[in-house]
Image: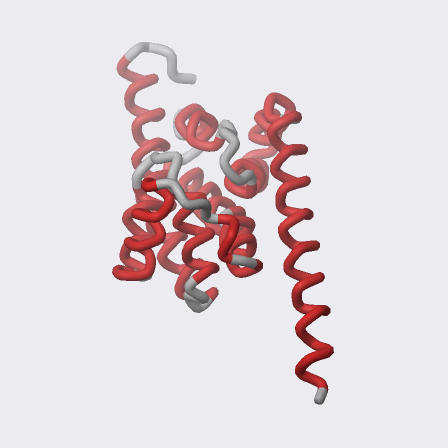
Length: 184
């Protein structure tokens, strides 16, 4: 008897979650230049910047550019750890958007292909797509939520992929800026 009454509440919570994520995305897109200044706070600033950059859905944010630059200022492993932890947690916005409803993914060929990869290969698709810089990871996070991938599995494989990507960019920043004579 309590099940029918729970459904409308669950639907309302899903819609509110989706609206909150979209509002956060639009806000972060508007203040992206100011967000770059968070990096002056060291590793916690890098963590927070990565969290905010990855919390946006379908809008670009300056995450890897800051990791590239900060790799020359701080130790690249520290930069990569802070950025990958923040990045993985930020990707929860896509996961939660997908968890709230299937309609978010869309019906385009690219979206359906990524959703199929996530459904077929599960966490390994998340790992690969998080490790390479690409604009489709938001779709993968949404798809992971849609297929109800366990949250811990999504976060773990997303973090591992983010760590590989951020290590690459932090070390690239360290050595390319040294090579160009622009290091600190």
